[in-house]
Length: 356
Image 1 (cartoon, helix red, strand yellow):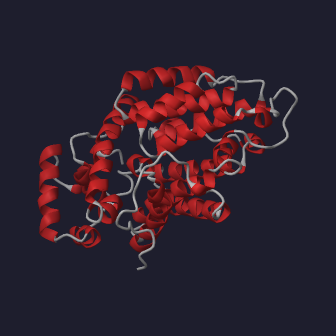
Image 2 (image 1 turned 30 degrees about the vertical axis):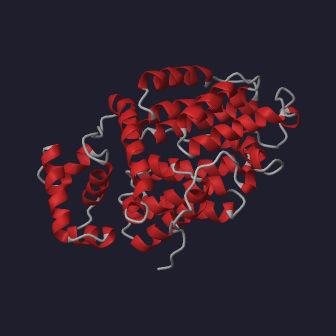
Image 3 (image 1 turned 45 degrees about the vertical axis):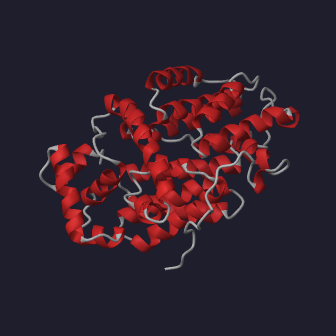
């Protein structure tokens, strides 16, 4: 297999400078265009806002996203709070969504729940079609993010003309993830692959997430080489910019890919990701578990959780050992520890503790 996407020594860094493609005219504007589609709308919508956005406000949105993707939560939160005071409802609501996820990741559940309550209140019908479309997107995306399958509603097709190309690609990522939650893995893979063909290299940010969605689906189909290829594509796009949040948020469903491709090659980076995974999963679980009949454990380390995910998905000890480049005895030892911690005796019982 090609070494595409492997981390090179000294490649990972987290700077304040936006990536080259985020420079003024291409850069912050890329993020803004995810929020404000440059499409005709009715006269009640503030279509002219794109032209009159101040450079500082545009940069604040970009900094918020940039720091969030780098898992620099305090800095992203500060920018989000600035953006939450914007006179544009699209910016305010998007910033509130980011602020919510930041506090989930920091295990500040009380703040996250407060944010969610405000966001849900604001997701009422709006006369502005663009704002209404954004609200419909959040109604669709939030249950996917929290793995609340019973709350996932069909996405109204009439909102698509009010979505930018980037937003439509993001919705395809969310659709692929929703299909993954429904265990429709072939369909999930097909949606992600089709979206990646449309994204090409024009949307590197959403391409990170689309590659991870494709990787998750391929892994569940035991198409290991294909799963690795998509994961390494995401890694190649994300790591040079220091973007580790996508790997934190998708750690469990990625089933050991973070461990295989990062743990041994970049132990310091893996340690950073693993520490943030613990906080993220704890905060996420405290919101997910009371709202779902499928509870998720917080008792396992990220490495144990990844191995448990593979076992619960039907992977044999040999398949796990071969994939993670460890011995079968090491797999057995880890599984014995996992069974003891979770008080289970076989693979099928793991599903009940891992939200499968």
